[in-house]
Length: 279
Image (cartoon, rainbow, N blue to C red; front, side):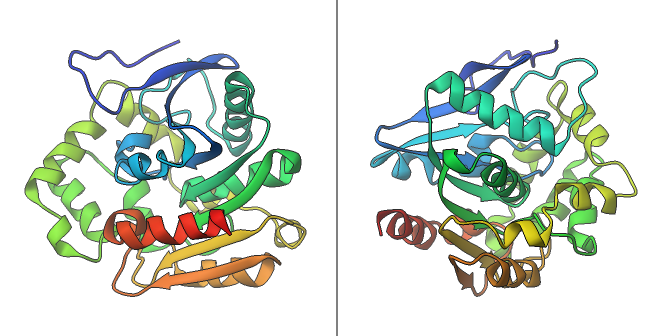
């Protein structure tokens, strides 16, 4: 069992919760209606890096549960583990059990959307409303943007290139942010796990995250689908198709927005999600 060694304090590190054979680094903020936030699959990503702008606001009215998924962040990396949809779905179930949560709403970003959908179909009694944001979960040809994300070879220049892919608003892509995210991607164990997770050919890993369309048509949950019109990682057509398949769904598309809806449109994203949960 390997855990990342830290020499400095970081807000990305929260509390360790026992989830099956390993410990999950998990932010548990606020009180009230529980909502689970599942991050995307970028290099060096953590729950805090993905959700840091929305956790404090959601925590004012909800109990926010934001884990580092297996293979990412500061969650333990057991020797010999295979990172699969089954492992991630089971991790969520074990986490809810450990925290004494019988039912929760879900917000899934990209990769996290695929896990949220899979979890909802396998554990229908444990999921309330679902928010999907630039979500995976269907099979479509791997985009150049996703190929670049999963093929990341650590360097500051490579990270800056990825930030250009993620964000429509280029003012967000600063040298300082690129340096911070590059340094995060090369922390002990981070890149080793990431490079082993989605090796070429990468279409098979996207397909493995997908849920069959006939299963999605059976999904009973109220679902809010959010997408940035200029998303270069997950095509807008994917969310359009999810909206067609999921019976009780609504779709909101942000113009002048890439894959980082919660960062590029933070205030609008928070208001949209809060209204959806409150309705």
